[in-house]
Image (cartoon, rainbow, N blue to C red; front, side):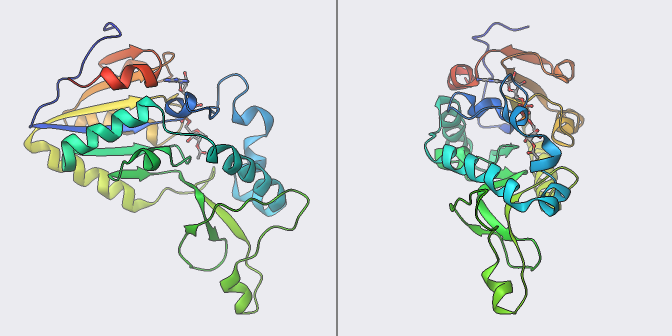
Length: 251
Ligand code: OAD
């Protein structure tokens, strides 16, 4: 294992593909999913983060996401987020950030070359009509009725609004995979680095990106508080908090 001050050399030929997970937002005060006291401990996953859970009890699902919306509004990007935003400014098109986080903190930090593959907490969409997702910071409590789509209502239907989140059992947006493939293809003209940070490596398909990157010739790095499930698939592992490691990781 390299020492905590290990650095990834970055020059004009370097492409960097980053995958982040909940650990990157832990130092901003957002609980991770699987750590002690994590998000799934208070609510069973299938009840609050699945299409079936939403059909059974949309109010419960909305109260779960409303609580996350409220809490997230008071959270700010930490030095780990800011380091990735600085790296994007430095590399431009040779940078791409894939996040499993829905908290939008990478966006808040300034990243634009960003794929939020599990959705966005501050967007909603209609569960029925094709209206595109829209910005929405509103919160709905368990005691009230779940929100209806204004577009559906105007047509005399009763479409429910839902958070713009990819739930268990749902498919990721295929356009994101195309963008990742296109990035890997472009990186063939230079040197590719793949970095995963703050993710337990337990959720498909994000946990297979490391294999895809390796197949494209990437050097693979992992920054995480503990060795996660797929740690042995990385060449370099730097153990520690991403808010401390990321700001001094890129040489
Ligand atoms: P997890 O909660 O599974 O894992 C977070 C990882 O971050 C753990 O391995 C921790 O050791 C590590 N960690 C905690 N604090 C850290 C810190 N300060 N610095 C670095 N690492 C730290 O979260 P994810 O891997 O993001 O999906 O979970 C993946 C997906 O599972 C989520 O996007 C969510 C969930 O089901 C959906 O909601 C669709």
